[in-house]
Length: 139
Image (cartoon, rainbow, N blue to C red; front, side, top):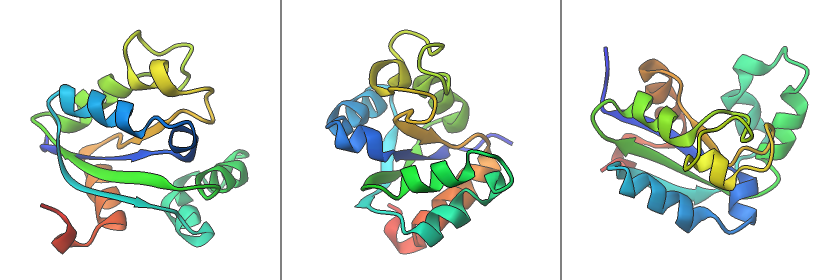
């Protein structure tokens, strides 16, 4: 079932490099409505929980360290076919393989520091959004 909401995070590398405005502009220009957004920083415990699916992978520790090194912007976005459309907008995980004009092609510096997170399924979008936002925080 396709839903009309997805979850994203502007990661610490993009925040540090001053790309919040540019990324938000790309998102809204692509027709997404921001229904929840916050500027925050993940604790180590939060990052470990959020990325628990990767806990057995060799990059897990580096991922947790990266995601806790500075602030992020988390948001819930709304649009028809939100998950699929947003995945297309952000581009491939590896910015050298990302299509021209995608967020990662424009703002990511490497596979590990790839500027943004985007939910990979409707189910994960709901889980990830609920992890970051209480129901009263969603417009």
